[in-house]
Image (cartoon, rainbow, N blue to C red; front, side, top):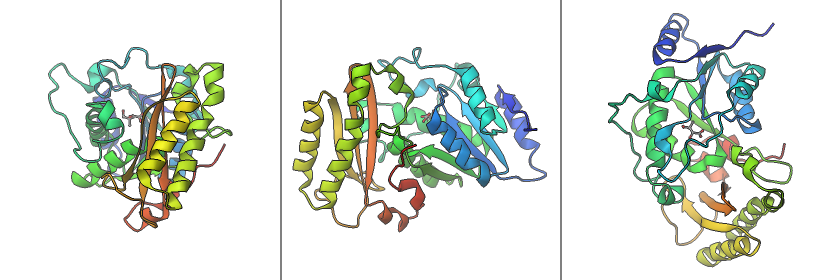
Length: 304
Ligand code: PAF
């Protein structure tokens, strides 16, 4: 019979539980989320399970990573379904605090990564990554994991957190898993549920265009003209493109050219109606292993 999941709601409960592990020093694996769990999250949990003795999932819709024009109140909250998914994946502990538990009214300290967080989404969502790093640092301090897994769909978030982990000597293994996709290529996201039938039909063109753009860049096509062609192709079929850009990894500097054998992140954010979608492709992923990132994280995504 599977072990029942332990649901903890307060920092005190979590810290008390964590202190109780000191005697046996198990490997703690951690998957932080904002809930509305889907198959992408299930994949994170499935992958972390064999790599740790104890797995912790957090569900916390973090107010500090939402901008004033982004609707925090509308973010889907599906606790009962999330709990079922967590149980099915054999999660040991679910930490699901209330907002006031994580941020007292006197909260005044934030953690900011100042390089990797700047371009791409950082340009259009001021304060977003500051909210992400702040909450993830708080969660790391509470859970004290050995390993934390994130999805590559949010590639910039992963690189920002990887950088924070290094810069602040947190000593957590911060790793990413490949984006989980629908059979037609659309990256799984809780936002996909907001797409109309027409937009859902169009949506797979997003990844297809990114993948084609990446292939052209790898073949030596000129950078800015190729990015512009990708943008125009997306706009022509009905997407509103917020950005489509390419940055060097892991610095997130802007390249002038794409060099063979060097790693880059090709990433975009688009709108279909009011729904914002993000996706990305790593160009030359094998080159990332040479600089300390684990290769499976960046392999081309599989359909599932
Ligand atoms: O990716 C998410 O769900 C969130 O940004 C995270 C990492 C849980 C921080 O709130």
